Length: 447
Image (cartoon, rainbow, N blue to C red; front, side, top):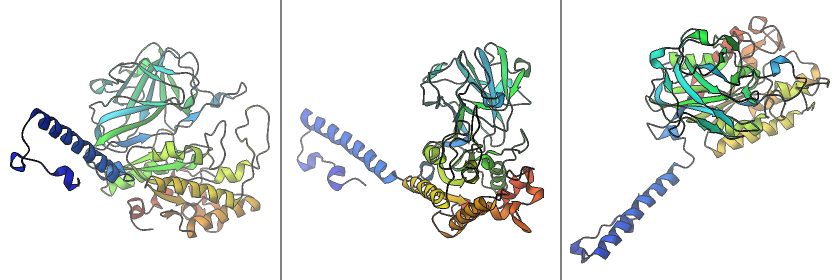
């Protein structure tokens, strides 16, 4: 509410004559009144998630975490991004929230030179690289078809009237003449993407224009909408167990995918679930192959997602393991080989909690699942899990360890939930993780 001295309106009965000077004074007072009202509203909204108060607030419907492409002459093919110069990239995304007024975000976070997107489009995806021609729309950037994304930056397209439906896949296509291979990607997408022959096929609906397939995400970082009703986003963030490694390709069977479907089945179509996991990621240390440490990327990848209200953190097994991996020549993805302690990991979790609280975002912790660890590493996992469960530091806890472990041998995963490597769940294991998430907890209920 405005102070009384500002909302009082003078009239001729108050003795104020309608002279030009008086009229100018009244106009100035009116402008001040509007400005102060906006400022007071801004103060009142500080620390409150945008989705909590605005029906037309923008919310993320899909996202992925950018990471650097390893720059090493000896990098194997699976650590090299495909060459795309003079060709069109078509990438498939599955939004988890319905809405309109779509915006697409591109990232050049790890670029050393500007990324120039000559043209881009969005369309409803059909089978493979084919799209619904009637739905195909061009994206613009500041009213222009071309975008220039500075090194280290990201850029959103202009709002585009476009009906997005949760679960209905979209194809985002971009044409670039970039001569150098991409330096910003998401390495393991668990989703097939497509590359055309030479030329601009941004507005081509036929799959035949896209003969080459790959399973990374290039430059594409997010898609947001104005939802049909007041909505918000849950961000899931962590390592390969959130990224969905070893789940079925193109099947959306990562645990965040299954959680999104659980929420929809429960009638909660006002909640997006965004997956910001990176395979190989660590809480405390960067990697040339597995992205920035979570404590460094947390603000960008989690807290700056549009409409985020809750973050679920799942991380830790790589911190425990990588210090014991022997160094080797060539591209060593496990550098630095640092043996971490439970107190160091707990301090890392506490920094995430502090960052989330500073943005008034709820943060839920998860226990580290079993991984057939040697005794000295298992002791660290057990100590961290004990702290996660009992400290009360998080706003709530999801017990993935209990959901996946073998009751007869609790240091290993139940065989039917294990993908076969002892660390990553199978499709059934990821479903068990999603089923272990208490819906009242992620919906904002008590611990």
